[in-house]
Length: 244
Image (cartoon, rainbow, N blue to C red; front, side, top):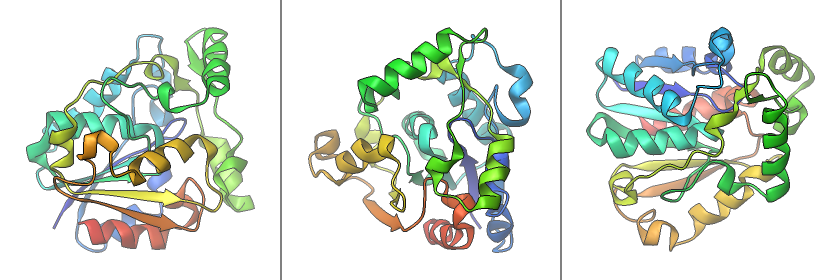
């Protein structure tokens, strides 16, 4: 039995894993789907004080309070920042780290650093115009969903805390690289803001070569959109079970 900790990306919540959780628990694994502060069903906690460290603490506390070891930490999109931090700070708790079409930062890099300048500027302008310094969700059409999935996601997305966007993350890539890693690349359609990350994790020199050493890393391609837990839950669950 493994302990799966599922961490959603920006604008999402623990709700996004609905169709994956039963497949993991049905295989007799323990599953904890975290909802980060200020989004999803915790949207009432939105405040300008929320930072990347707030969200890292959300996940670290979930692992601590639930007394989990041998954790398969699954991080989607923005949560790649969080997963990298947890792997650096709590390496002894993790069994596998799964980046799901996720941000994989370089040391001292922010989430915004992986985006084109036009994207950065648009999001910061939106956050500054918001009373709680958050930026609104995109049209779910970018995720490549069916019509019913589109409507389901559109109803549930919530604004994302703006101060998580430019916060740099300091970590030791060698500590993270000591943990087995899987990068799930979603390519149909490919989300443009993840393109730069796909290129860097394929580069043998990434993290000064550490990404392709240590505990080992693999890339798995899925012919689906950016939200595989929604658009292709059965196929996605099989990949996770292989990591567990």
